[in-house]
Structures are given as C-alpha cells and as structure tokens.
Image (cartoon, rainbow, N blue to C red):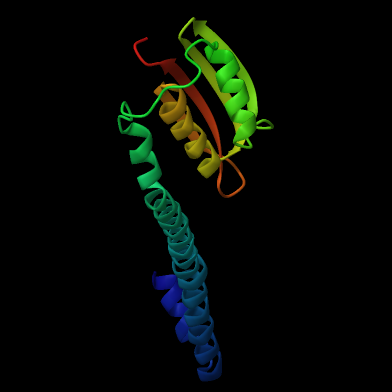
Length: 166
C-alpha cells in the first residue's frame, strides 16, 4: 500500500485528477456491468415469467366452469350407445367434436375402459368432447394428464375413459 501511495504522491496534480477520474469510471463500470445490469435483466425476466403464468391462470379460470360440468353427475339424461363398443364411441365422438387430427392413439384397457392420447388438441374442444361423452354415452374420465402445447390453447393429453359402472 505504501508503494501505491508513494507512486500517487509522485504524480503531478493533473495526473492525480486523471487517476481519480479513471478509478471512479472503473468503479462505476464494475457496478453497472457487475451488479445493476444483471439484476435489472433478472427482474425483467421474472416479470415476463409472472405475466405468462398469470395469463395461463386467467385462461384456466375462464374454462373452469367447463371442467365442473365434466365432473357433474348427469345420471338424469338418457344414455346412448349402450350396445356400441367404447372404442367406436370414442372414435366417432372425437371426429364429431373436431379432434380427429389430435387423436394419436386409442388403446383399450378392457371392455369398458380405454386410454386416449391427444396431441395438439384444442383444449376447449377437448372439454366439450369429454362432456358429451359423459352426458350422452355415460363415459366418464377416470384419469387425465394435460400438458400445455407450444401453441396457445392447445394441449397434449392422456385420458383414461371408462363406462359408468366399470
């Protein structure tokens, strides 16, 4: 430390001012690029993530009534297709509800149960389809896994369907 002080004392007054100004510039640059800018970018990134999550939450809240309808017991309505196989009901109703392109696989688990894989399915259409299966055919959703797709409003889903009483 003594050597630095001696060197500084040996400088002319103009040189001392230049050294002090340079030191201040270096400290400010370190603060700006080392602390302020990374912190600012991190805050902006977090804000964007919060906005995306909030938008997804608003979307999900907007369709929660449809999900409630799927869970309700519609036992008072007449049940169609009692003699049709579950696979043919699922296939026909998915086409009627505009999900033919989204259905990737229908795998029967037994006579009264099947697993359906959907890819890039419109979420609202999927909910209407599941509601019509339950309401019109007595086919209920036993298990469902839904993952948002890259496109807004579309999902990937794995759904286990079963006839009532299965």
